[in-house]
Length: 264
Ligand SMILES: Nc1ncnc2c1ncn2[C@@H]1O[C@H](COP(=O)(O)OP(=O)(O)O)[C@@H](O)[C@H]1O
Ligand SMILES: [Mg+2]
View (tube, rainbow, N blue to C red):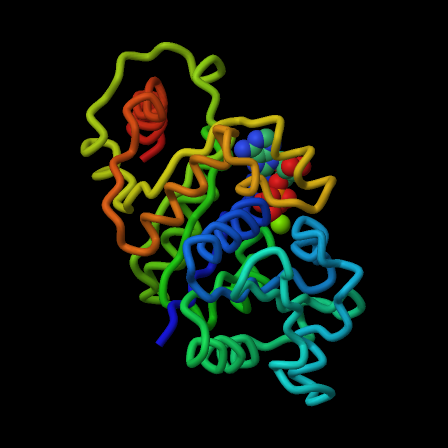
């Protein structure tokens, strides 16, 4: 049985779609079978980030409305074995989908695929409820700024209420220069406060923007720091024990800790 992982955040623009696209591709490069599910009904863009938009014929809404079989709605990514995309409908809105619909789709996909990554829309409303309905686990993406962390904290509470676990944190667009040179904190202290596990830190990487525009996920570019970070996270998702490099953490934990001790 495969794992269904919702990629979510609360705040928009923090890198959920980028993370879903890169982690899905990375998992397929590691030999896993993967379906990327775009749950951003009405505002889909995972197909564009994956460079598959011209090949989308059917969407999850067509499956729900029994216009087509689930298998037929999956778009195969020809660049790597075992990677599929299920696009979201552009012409519907989030209320046209029910959480039970998404759960049924995820339950079906997990019988065939190793990983189902569901790209969630921003917010805590219906779109989030739909996206998380079929999830076993969650990846919460945040950027290292106060508003994104606050929204992540809110989402973590909702995921815990829904008994989705583990919840793993990805800190995206990390830039040591922006975070400043706060004295380094023990990782365990910070994660204790956040109460979820850190699965990786993705640096600010200008390659992300180019790769998004070209529809080629960054993980295909071996040398880039962002690609390496996503490959490490994918390996951790498969159960490999790969320590988080110290450099990734520098400065970040003290900022997070300061914020949480002030705001909780
Ligand atoms: N690590 C990164 N470095 C640089 N730019 C990034 C990074 N992650 C995401 N971005 C950019 O941030 C924007 C929002 O990312 P996206 O994945 O669409 O966020 P979300 O799905 O959470 O709304 C995009 O323009 C993307 O290219
Ligand atoms: Mg998105």
